[in-house]
Image (cartoon, rainbow, N blue to C red; front, side, top):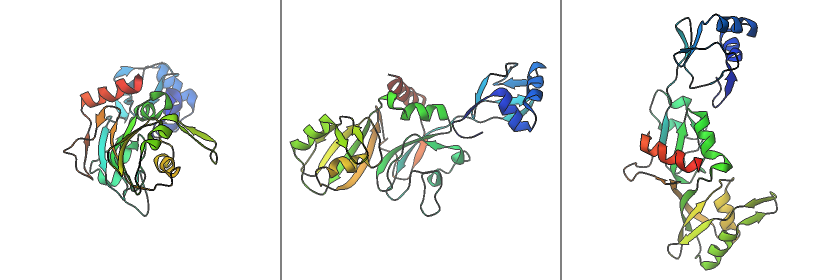
Length: 241
């Protein structure tokens, strides 16, 4: 099953078993199919890559959900595969690594918190615009910054070339060349383009939090682990709100 995809059960059985959908419906009507341990006769039942599906006690699909937090180093690309560069997947030494996909991406030279999962519904929920889940960054600039940046970011920006409006962002100046930035969106090179309005190149960019989930201090660059139940609950409560 494709990552993040959902199918009607009869269609899934037809594709998996290489049989006509009418034969798949007969199997369902004969109570030969179970979904997540329970007999299922409804052909319209929606299943996904995390559904446990069995036929006559023979498992056809069984996959555990995994939710991963990773500290991305500079030079690693946010992709599941790349012929030239190391990917975030390459850093995850686990049997389920190749089943994971990203909940949002970081540019190649941006460091920090990356979330991955094999649960397509979860990653979609985190990245949907309606989630209003803020991403928090530390930014280092080539040139000095001042309060005019704060005001401009708070008003949002319009990029004529793309014809898109960037939502207001919260910028807090930390020093002459550094600031923290919170954005609700994650458009292509958004942060670099926002500072580009001031012709001030971004020297370094680090994502330290998504919502209230902070990158753990003991997770060094290149390291990963699975999220705890409390961390998952924290993320989902924010994205649902």
